Image (cartoon, rainbow, N blue to C red; front, top):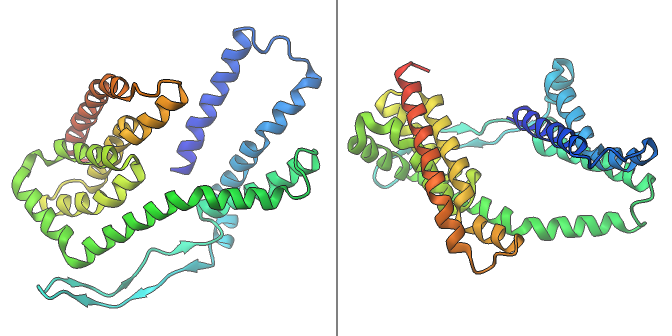
Amino acid sequence: MNLGAFTGGLAGLAVSMWVARWGGAGKGIERSDRKPLLLALSAYIILILFTVVILLIPPVKDWLGQISLQIQFPETVTSLGYVSPAGTNRPIRIFTHAGAILVYTSLVSFFIYRRAGLYEPDAGKNILRATIKSMMSSSLSIALMVAMASMMQGSGMTEALAQGLANAVGNAFPLIAPWIGAIGAFMTGSNTNSNVVFAGLQMRTTELLAYSVPAILAGQTAGAAVASVAAPTKVVVGASTAGMAGKEGDVLRALIGYTALLVMFISLLTGLANLLGF
């Protein structure tokens, strides 16, 4: 997923640079003026290099992946008899995790910018303080979402909902799955939050109906990714950024139709993928 996102972003960057030069914006740039551009892009270049080296070179990946965080959870039984078997979480490879790669990139980029004279001596403390301040609200919401999903899974709520959903929609479930992801993203404003809340439900319902789990989960996250664009929280931010404060309703009405068509297309693709056995 990381490499896929990088590839798309890199393609967009390449096309943007070509359009800028073709349109005349970059024709007057002298060779001596390219250094600030390369310096500005250095963090992204370093991030790509770290990702490629750590994730695509097996010896490096295996060596850094030796240390992992894994916790043993005991078996639990609810008062209604739902059993959560004992087990462990998926191992978190501390030094090859996406967060670790971002830390490596941030540190190297910080020293490059500081060496170039772009940072004051106390810039590190200010950056750290601003980062902690900006991440608190989003981190809290994600933590609460994960806690809710874990509680639903461990208490048997997800199982009950999955059985009810399987009985209600039956063979039409592959067509419904992307809409569930879309509703989750519309409510929470995030593809990630939608997956946290509904991925377990989607997977269990898929297992009960004997459909393709990868195809259904792909429909879930694709539907959520599309619908997150029309989420009210994002519409408010986008409208205020574009100087359209107070016109959020107009923006949302314009987006709903296009978003629904795209989710419908994803719904059809998900159904086709299940028919073809993907």
